[in-house]
Length: 273
Image (cartoon, rainbow, N blue to C red; front, side, top):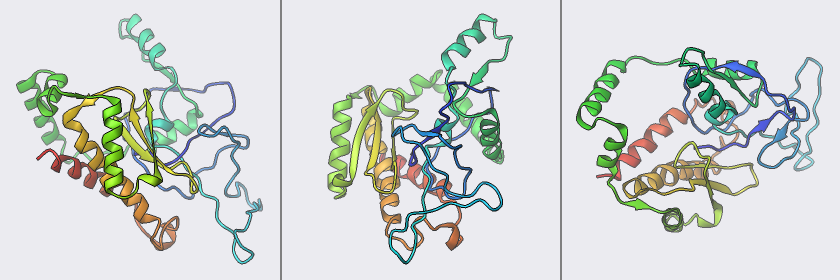
């Protein structure tokens, strides 16, 4: 689930970095992170970004006060880590890799600097191997019983397909049942990393649910809406009414993403009976 809008460099040059380890996705309200360079562009709006915090001792920033009593803090929004460090030359790098007989490591290019990408991978590479043996055992059983991931997914979700229009309507019905349809816009994209995700581009924007432009397995649909809307979206909306909204560090709250994603996953599995 992706809540924040990306800022990318306005430069035409693309920095180069060696392929890094895999990373997970998620959505988060971010405060205190590294700000974009002056003149960086918000890819969702095409508008230039402004720095939210000083970048050197003695530097100053000015905020437009919401009232004469207290200025309103500018908040930064960004997409999930997977989108921020998504290579821009995947197909080209793949072709070169196979043409070399899989002997030359692919060199991937990114929208951000090599330093930014390296730091992003490093910050999210603290992997817990406590359940690795169990995970391998499960994957081995899946391979032994079904042979391929496609065969497994068909056995899990069935052969029936749900078209994009049908998926959109199912989501709309779910939103109406939850009485939040007026606060959400549904968009279809063929570049999604997941079947669906939910995010909010900015404080004054509607929530957006991005869905795949293709069809999906009918057996996945209820799990998708329970996961994205029944868990992530409703949590985000509820958060806006809490005293800690956009002030989590001040209330010493820990990162909620891992717990929320676990609950969303359980919610989607429960829908499968």
